Image (cartoon, rainbow, N blue to C red; front, side, top):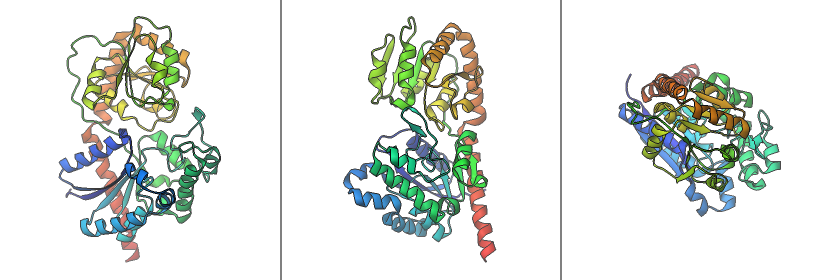
Length: 394
């Protein structure tokens, strides 16, 4: 296989998170394998410098993106354009510029934005799918995006406009869903099933090796926000004695958990520090109350042989095999979570066995090598579709 030229497009977030890391890791992986990689990037820190009317217009159709993309496509001549996030500054005008240049687009579906303006299928602390498969006006009525009716209207308008134009149906050669649950949701939302391929996230992690001692205590890693299930975790932890919970992350819900006995607040940690914490813990706790797509934290946990205690919700119920690579519990139920925590603390050998299974799952599915092979397969499928279309119109 000859090396490809790949243009990666990403609208980076104000607060860097897992999605930004996935973009960087995939770009580095491709470059190491000899591909020529160029990145077209916008940054949401620019939003503060952009007037509201202009930002709304750019979200619907960015003239700057059209202009810059045409120039990059002409100069770089990529074989494929891999898009990660376009909201709000890149905009779907990118897809049209690529189509004009005859370059196939691959779009990773990191969240549910194309089906839900708020991107999480979450409203008032509960799963909400009212916008699935229909125009997303219920989200506007409830102000789901950033608790703003006006901002939600802009995002909903973008979705309605580009569904009407056929952008998502005709201008994207392949979509990447991170698991089968997410793929099914996007099909339900109207994306073409034959163009959605599954490729999970990955991480580069050395084998866990010999542990210095027995694993102990529990670990939470992530943003301390309501959708992560912090309230249920705090209630489940009440009254626990003889166990520790280490919390890595920051966010508005931190106060709910910080005052509980046995809880150590670690703040934001580097990736290396997170992995050190993971190698010492008995289990990672993921009590989310929304449809997590594919938390990179879960991949890292599996990579270091750490079992996961997770909500039986959405993709988590697919990714964590109950009793094999971790434990599942009813989402938002602190009593059910407390019971799982107690069982795990009382059965460290069984948890260690699950951790070994988790490492095996990582080696089979989530290594850079496996990810690279699947990514190239998706790129080549997208390029083959473009070549077939060109031959048809020749």
